[in-house]
Length: 415
Image 1 (tube, rainbow, N blue to C red):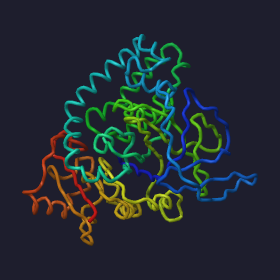
Image 2: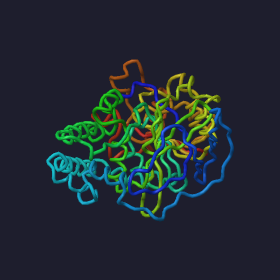
Image 3: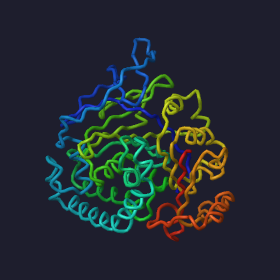
Image 4: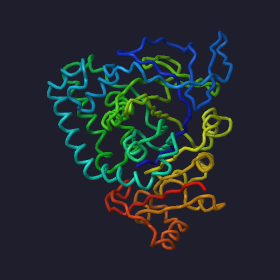
């Protein structure tokens, strides 16, 4: 389970380009200017000979939706990973091989079971219970998420932007055309293995992900993240990396970006939903107080954003610790709604100042045995007892208590 310290995120969006093939990249520091999405103010780096940067505010614009071509490199590769026969265009021939035919059969079988056991009920329930925040918030912040876009889009399908973070490396999609004999079978096997926990338990285990997402296996989180984007009915429009230059600036880089001095710490995936272009961001960064404070560029940008939905699940109780106080404060300050299980913010913080309306669902019980040093939260226990007649039922099960089906959802909406 997630026993590691997770990461911060930056609320910004940059202008994407549509390419049927990989964009031509250039090693080193990007020299092109970038444009931010309409709800964002982002610093633009200006590269100089000295290596220094000037920070300016730049104009804002909408991401383009026209000229989307589904026959692009990213969409085709992820179609193979997702078992979408007939939708991989130049890669469709791979489904004639035993490796990817078996992969498609496995994915289809697991997805039907997942849909029947969990997703249908989640979708129907959230459509009623989360109707208000879903109609208002255009951004979902999902800290400690790993690659779990699946839960985010199932609960919050109306968002334009999903911002996720974890400790797992970003990585790359497999270059299937360069695979040697035998590598297709090996990769398909490792990829199926990396999906096991989310199919069975509804969450990823950090320790196992850090093993599974090694470059010699599934290279980073990106293949699994894009798998969930495709399997939930979307198409990939573009992928860009995000690169940090000290605490001066963050720049967007092409997918084939290479720089021996630094690796991308974030990725932006643009996808199409019902003709509308949306974005998923994932960042690998530590949001403990020593790295996430008012001297940090992430902290400053994140603080400019408000009125988003924060969703937290299976988060190893990290926000219960003193070293997560800055992230805790920012979530409380900037969220219009916080939807979480008991591993998220301690319940007592919602009671302070009487600034939140609370709704409880499920059954509250002590933390699972992986956290023997934790006891039940007394304020949350008392709230369940006091408001027992109004506690809602859950028609599905998520998180650490998936086995006992004694799980909880806390829905806090700001007054």
